[in-house]
Image (cartoon, helix red, strand yellow):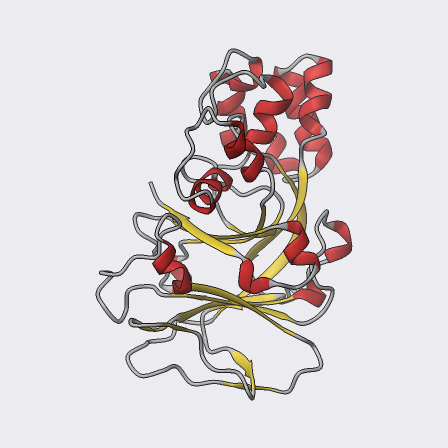
Length: 292
């Protein structure tokens, strides 16, 4: 099968597209692919690019992230930017330093206060920090009441990523007049092509950059709706425009090895505007999560 020969390569995806789409449509579809970094559980002699769980190495002057009125956030992952082959990506990710991801996971309140994109008051429940390579850091013990997740080392490799045909960028390319977020009459929406894509890659997985692998509707639409305060309908062009202004920073899937289960086998997503990423304004990253 294609996916097992050269999984995640442009050539493998080109071959897949050529089997189901016209030459013109296949080239257009290939042009919408984006490079991303797949993070997989490291084994044996794999180079380690980061880890899930454990304890974070925070700058000595930094405080542990807290959701005011609720308590400290749990530490989810640490990613070493220097080990991500950032030059191969199409986003301005830092070439050095460490990305730290925190999330209010319900340990302190039995999941009562959810972190939801549509609830502005909950936004402080997810945080991403960039620690510069030259900052003085020290491993920080978990605050009272939080149990650290088991450490799971991650290895990284660059791959090409596709997105669902109802993603705003795909809709704009193949059926700009079609209803947002729904199937439309085009071969990229055919069940045969969708099944081939699912067979090629049916896991959300852990990822930096590239297209998000959404569990439900495109996560960019969730973020756009939240930013616009839910005040626009899905046929309002402002929603598509806003969704197109966000890129995936990171996604972390449920992971048995790390005792991480996000809802019903769901995933956590952090997105950011390219201009904020370029200015290293990680405090402006937005968060959402989805599950089946």
